[in-house]
Image (tube, rainbow, N blue to C red; front, side, top):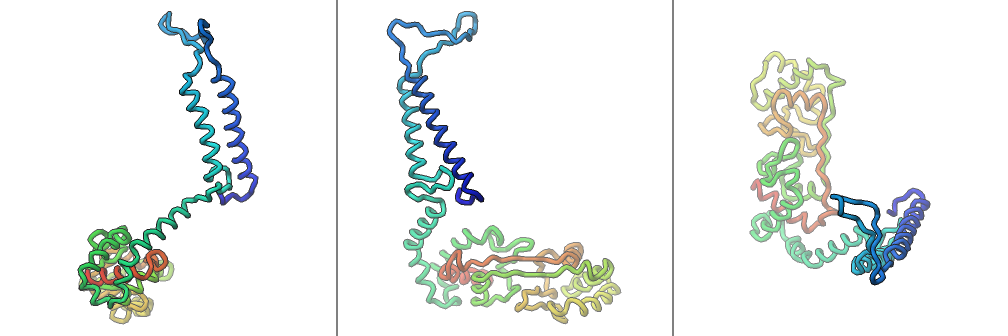
Length: 299
């Protein structure tokens, strides 16, 4: 409610809410306070069913009437204590963000020491610590499985963390840096620069690099195009560059698929893979344990 572009809307909501409660209160008092006088007959409202079943204008039961009055008073008290009247934050100043931050602070105070004690340990030795790996596996299940899968074998566009193929390097400190700072891969689209035939030729040449069957004549033509446009990132032999995050094209590991269709698609449209940074979200202690756990998966 604090994001209104004009204070008029905040006042509008507050006034309409208060007036509605007051009008409802007056109406309830006026109509619901009526009591039956002993011996008085209730009036019919004119609705009749099955010839002799009449709807009568009986007063509301007192318990129902009293509960209705109490609920309106409770509504006013609630709107005074908590947000509900436009941008008014309430006397207690409660907010979802404030409650979340309070719960996170309490959790960090309670569980923080568990993570902090592992921070001083070297990542390689930590990768052999069963207690740390148990903690790391739970952190991975909570924060990483959405992209990399519960078994850490990834999916199309999300790297397999159990093999020896690393876009940016598989050393423990490099893995930790990747989790801390994130990564943003960028394979530029070549569809507007290389024509369809040229792209198909490059795809054929790329397939030969990894040992896949390909048309020799097309691959030979594709090698020339590859040397002109692709070696800057992937290298003359197609082995990639961890410094740039350029994948190795000479193995049988494919991030987006190794079929002819997928390779052509990658060259034509490019690829943009993003690994979000987790430094601010998780903190270094948790990332340290996660890095050791991820390193252990392939070692």
